[in-house]
Image (cartoon, rainbow, N blue to C red; front, top):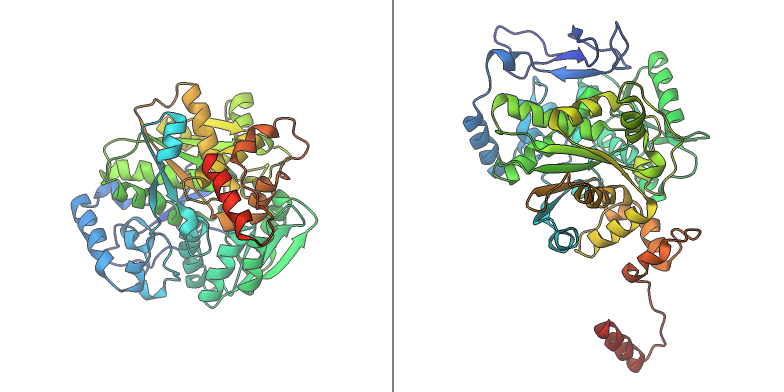
Length: 451
């Protein structure tokens, strides 16, 4: 699967390295696990140790590509291809112009939290509405390059939507395994529309992933979940693009939602690589926030000091992070410790409140994204984040990924059995049913003005 040998291999020629025992190989099996110890593999670039890329030339080249109309340059992922696995031909890329996502200032949330400089990197502005696209463009490209006809994933929704879109665009067939129930129909509808063979299994996400692992050992199907290291290579460009948007001046903190933990792993990998080759001069602290009902990483760190995974039975309305047995937990712990980051959990009430506060900025996100703002409040209260520090929240999905959550929130139906839900009342904006008269509308407008 690694590029063909040449007399002068490119600097981004790659190899697979085990995250546990360090074993290096030129190829990987379909489960993307080490042949010796069976832990996860990651992609490494050995030639960077011999000859670091010229960072000034890279920055100029990446900026100049913004004026290009080539497919690879229009992608906010492949524009940074010198830091991605080498391809023989840029024309083989499967791209939907992913990446190029905005960095928003959050002035109202900054005032609420007391942090002077608060931003949101909104990955929900990708083609299928989530951060999964920036990884899927790389993984799908290498799937087709390896000669596979079928790609497959286990998903809580976003991965399936992204995989199905990139498979369809690249002339591949896709198989989606999703848990029966507790999944956003808005996300599932995307996979259906993009032509995926969709199977709802009577199990949870972790059960779907386990079955997928067995499937790829018996059938010629290429796995596109986040244990696929090519996925994480694409996802790491979020951090590269963010640093470029900040003129290569790192923020003090980057805060990420924690589900299967591939995204936090990818962002951390990018930060460490950028520091190694000199693109940035210091590391931001990368922190991961989980829902209380799906807090496997939090419990793993608190109860075993990160030595053994503590699996949980996940339960949260934030469907994108309803995962109890995260595959990339070791990678996530590595980047947390390497960057000095924190790991926290937040309640359903705190998630709902934070989502509404982000929405009040005119910026919509799915509930899983809102754990970042909720977690920031806790990190400030603990003194981990200081008021004069700069913070970037990574918003992973679009508001329209889970509209039922938003409707239930504003109607007061989101947490009907919670005795604490009244703290959300001032944030609710339910539709107002009126008689079709001008006086009724004017009266409502006047009341809104007073409030």
